[in-house]
Image 1 (cartoon, rainbow, N blue to C red):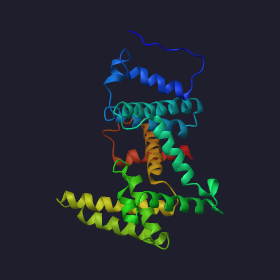
Image 2 (cartoon, rainbow, N blue to C red):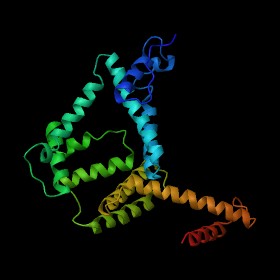
Image 3 (cartoon, one colour):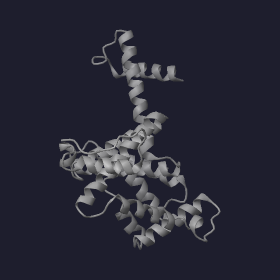
Image 4 (tube, rainbow, N blue to C red):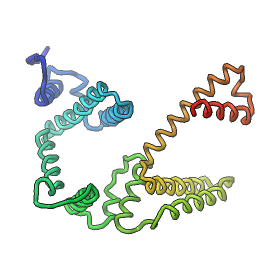
Amino acid sequence: MSVNFEFKENYTFDDLVEIVKLLRSPGGCPWDMEQNHKSIREDFLEETYEVLEAIDTDNKVLLEEELGDVLLQVVFHAQISKEDKDFDINNVTDGICKKLIERHPHVFGDITVNSTEEVLSNWDTIKRQTKSQTSQSVAMAAIPDTFPALMKAQKVQSKAKKAGFDWPDASGAFMKVLEETEELKEVFNSDNKDRIEDELGDLLFSVVNVARFCDCNAESALEKATKKFMRRYTAVEHLAEEKNIDMKTSSIETLDKLWESVKMLEK
């Protein structure tokens, strides 16, 4: 049984809300009707990453499509909550509009700012006040556990900096990396896997600190490094095939020469 629906040449946000409602209603789609917040949780994450991929590749056509997929996720979750009598999409839009107005007093109020840094400082202050975050430790605790580890580490360190708990310059951060590297070396050959993991975590955390002083995003830096490795490894495979080199049986010295050749070709 089909539902009543008006077909149009162009659709609006309100049409999207109505379509999702119809998909979830009797006579709609069995799959859509069965979903709940948790069952489509990973879908939201996947769609978000696909938006990032479109941004990174500067693919505007794909970006338009993927933003639509993310918007669908927002509307879908809001429809589920409406059916549960928790909130609806209007509550969602009302909340974000009020938040934007509240956190931009330099636009909607009588506050004057002279730089982006002042805007961010005001945003952070207002956010802490509205969320009753009386200290930076409370603000740290509010960072979601679902954040990628590097991202969470960098946010935690940034909040510590706001409280004055930070190195005066990058030299301290670099020294900490060397210190943590030596501590990891000391336990590397031991049987204490918990200690090894602990020291490895300290090293990674200290590297994130350096990333912060470099004004770089640790998460995106590692992503770029991983893509670079994949690109170079693929080139090494092709080069090994051209030279009839069996990578599985070759020495690390031979493979390293191939790697260096690939790096020189890139340059």
